[in-house]
Length: 226
Image (cartoon, rainbow, N blue to C red):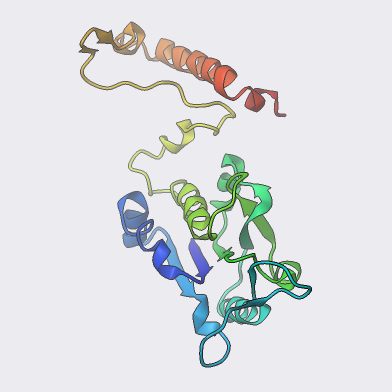
């Protein structure tokens, strides 16, 4: 898989891809993540990428020309399955979307900034719009990192135990059950006996029951969805 991220602030993405699981996935060649500085496509001597809104109003708008040129330069090299714009008014990103995107080969993630991007970019180039929640960030970089992380960890070979991703919260519309590790008894706080029993079918039954109970208490909306 290849993920191209278009941003006005590329340094914001150094850390998310420079450590832990994502870094290992990149070094092992399981995914290629390329960050593109939009200012390289900016206009004029000052590499301008934003301008005032037509019709007035507070906040600057990212211009169509630099974004279009960047996207078209990438499309000239390969075909993209999705060109995704990170925006608060996009579709709510969830595990099912992450699963679907993990099966793709080439993705572009466009990070918004300022007051947003010229609507003509959305009309002409964007194939999917995603939001990570009902709140506004200073830019789309952190959202793009979140989406990339959720996708990359699903790729074969990224996690040491590939079954781990299958038991994550939301994979089966349930939250994950509680987990424990050593010691079995810490200052009187004991691990449930069932987890120490070695009876794995019963352990799985317990985990499923705990997952259902936790989901009912914390996210009953998940149980109501089709």
